[in-house]
Length: 509
Image (cartoon, rainbow, N blue to C red; front, side, top):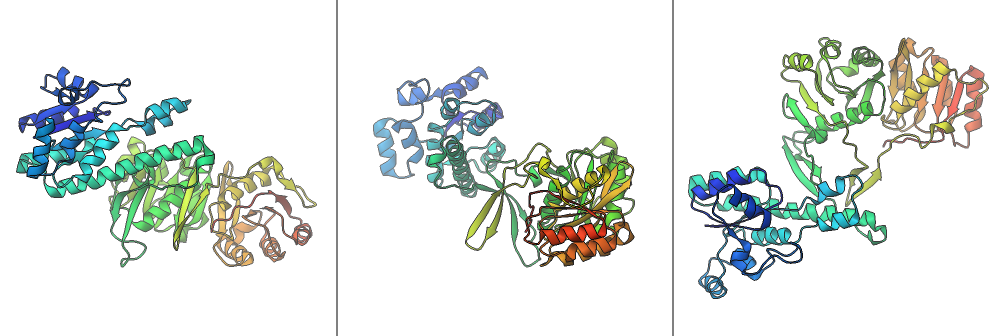
């Protein structure tokens, strides 16, 4: 068995080569890979030994040679074997290749276009595609994580099985497609005039038990090269995450990360039911649960800080489906072990995407992430009574919450204890805004008196302001921009309410 090795990532290379040698494999390697194998005391033929042609163009051309590609593309036929013998090329049975680290290169700060282009692999991609095309005879490995899979097949069968070769070929084509997409996207950014089309590269990260309902199939896909765990992180404990778990975790995680102070967000069926910010997570937990304790049962929770045991203890015996945080203290991990069925996700706080995608029939919608108001300095007091500092602070919090509630979003919030601001009533996802105000009033009850209200879009009629005033709301934040703004302001003045126009809308359909 002849094996061609040409790897940029040399993780696991020597262990793999030793395993191959134990099976009697003859090793052929290029450049740095050959030097690494020789330094480990392994017998290896260089690519130059096979091609009788040296590396040229400072290493740009090494494996691009008929003797190499013929050995990979040859079929198991007498005619092809005769052709190989005529040109003195070996039959190559296994190709171990990974590519120049283009994605890592462009992720570095201050990378130049010249550096990026120099890290576009040519020969490696050609080797992978050739081997994947000829998977009927040749096995191709482009991921070091698959080394053990190949060695296991060799130990069990003496060859790489056709089933494994098929899997590896599919993975190889997906890998080169993602690689090309990364190059294309980078160059489109560098030269926007040439960006006429785009390609989304998706990688299956997990097959889910079912979708929103048991009769629907579902899977989790990651964009590009990864990371491809839940929310770019990993499941630390608990049952397998469901389709609905992942949706709720994403909604809660985006909500909690919106705020600077320690914040807790509780989501149920994609709707936030409790959000609170405080100086510590334990206090925030109690305030978030108190916002709507009935809906919090069976909810999904996100923290924007490392979680400690005291924050978990604040939930008491409340049943939760899943939680996500950037990390967990040792005492929190110990406490979580007692809730074996609770799904616990650790997600990287630094992973923030630029775009979000939604599917429609026959297409994909893409938009930039809503990161908040373009300029909070443009907020304007428009009512007769100006908002107090305390009201403005609560409005700022409520406004941030409204961005994560389904439109027509209405959020009631207040300082519930010194230094802790929380939602006390949330309404959203209804066809008209006044019904969302009524829902928030019903959820808040007496807590609406003295609270503030945020609305993700303008009030088309003054009725929403009137319902809120009757419930005891004292200040409102809304974008403004309605032809009936004057009527909304008049309703606020009649009730003695402050009103801020933010100048920005935050629909979330």
